Length: 453
Image 1 (cartoon, rainbow, N blue to C red):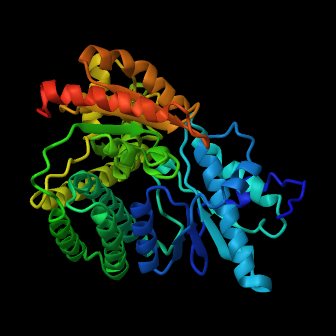
Image 2: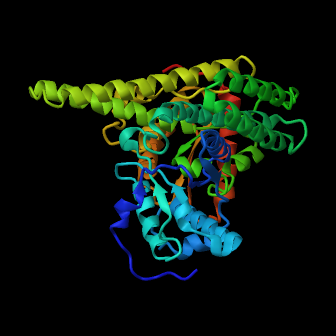
Image 3: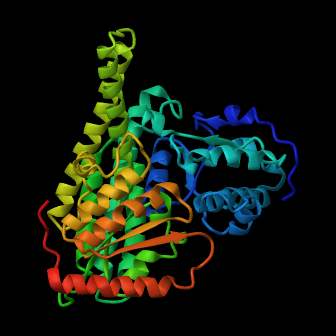
């Protein structure tokens, strides 16, 4: 690939945003493998030609077209889209037209660099004359990742509900894997089973999702859970329970975090990672919280003009949040009748943890809100250790580490920071082994009994 030198900054607004996906190929970066594939299946069921891009095969391209000052996920996803386009050009030859593709890269408002990924990647794509017509589909936390505009208005709500369920089911399949793999009867059996289960649920969402036949989807999920439960060897004793928090991409992208969950398992852990649905719940909750705060402020200032709009926002975001919690609880309730999988923390409860001890504030935002409170919640729930996974130099996660380290020392619960970039830290293995030794000692002293607040 040879790049041009001129960048049209107008394209940052013209070619980054919310676009109708009809007759386009929607390219989704792989973050958590299962959830992304289920989401792509939902999109296909609604008539969108969506597929998950191969990940990390374009790391050389990602490094070439970034400076190294960006967040590590920016390097990976930049390489993923450039590699995908390179493969498409070779496959299609003269028939290749970059206008047929929309690259799916959401964003977040606030101080995190994630909000700038799609702007930077837009500039990179524009340096290639053959790629400058690729649009970037950028959903935003500003409106709770609304899907309005990407398909016909009459189908937006159904797509949103089905997409959310796919995130929850993806989380459950991940948690099923982490629940059964440390206790599997035959090495490799759990991984093979979950890969098969992912494809089965992809098919279910593509077939049943457009009609919102959620009961049938959950019936198929229950069948999967029943089969997966049979992989567990009941003779293997319980192991120390480790919770993971951190930046959403790094903690869920296996290649980026160098398969940290499997490494922890190798040294004797059972692991629970924070979920993708937790972030979706947080964005809806935070938009609702902000709308309420603005509403109260306008009342105090006797500014009645914005009240109607703010009331509409409160109803909309409130409906989204309460629907998400209802659907998530309903799904976990069915699954937990088959196997004991940990549920997500309530977002409101996480905010209460922060406020009670004045640790942090949702007013500041970022994933630090979830990570700080999540770490404290893990400790109170009797976890034997917590790992914070994040990109090297990540501001929210560095703040998280600074706040929680003294708290974890006071609580006597092992804690480990694991920052990542494209290199392999020479002491990583030793640090994890030391952490797991501490977690094992904690497990022997305290077991996994839930502690009081």
